[in-house]
Image (cartoon, rainbow, N blue to C red; front, side):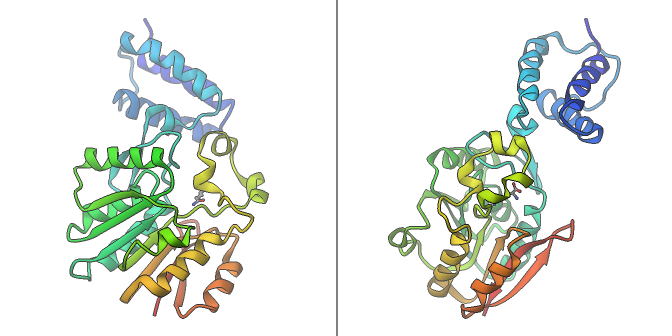
Length: 279
Ligand code: GLN
């Protein structure tokens, strides 16, 4: 029988072939904690009932699959969210969007909020949990993503979010969504030419539909969000979107022909990351 530390080192050695040694350490740690609830690496026996699982998981690791899909969960803001290949793994920089949205929403009595392209629901559910007076409509085009989002809603026991299927790029569907105090979104914003900057594991395992707009125009979501906001944002309302760090000029070009004032906020890596719009 092997000890926890032996199994941990074996996994780390395998991961080192694919990742830097810091990343390998980090991934092994997340895997042990999130999959087996093993928080301390010591010389106790590695529970034998897990040995078959880890053999299968090692094959998935070797294939480059992200640890969050292997454990089935990702930590974001204050909670674990269920994730699978139908949804993007929540990114730490998106927590900034949630932070700004919560600060704003707390100043409104019963804020009506829409989350466009909700995926796992991590943005909508994090806001809903902290601003319990909010009513949030969260939409996505993908039924599989909505299923995952609803599982997260049930697991977190959140009531003030409704997940609905909608194709936001279709004007007829957009028009029926209603009016809101706040519009939030982390839309697909990568253009295919940027694939060279992305990791193999993102390209191979994360859903294209969440990353690349299905259109030759990679700014299409921002154009439609602003168009929607012109008609459906209530007085003193605000739009908060995640943006592509390489597309600031294009964002500014789009915003400059709208009636909104704007601000672009940097993430913890000092990359332009959040677009804020208001009147
Ligand atoms: N930030 C994500 C990435 O780098 C992309 C998120 C998105 O397209 N909305 O993979």
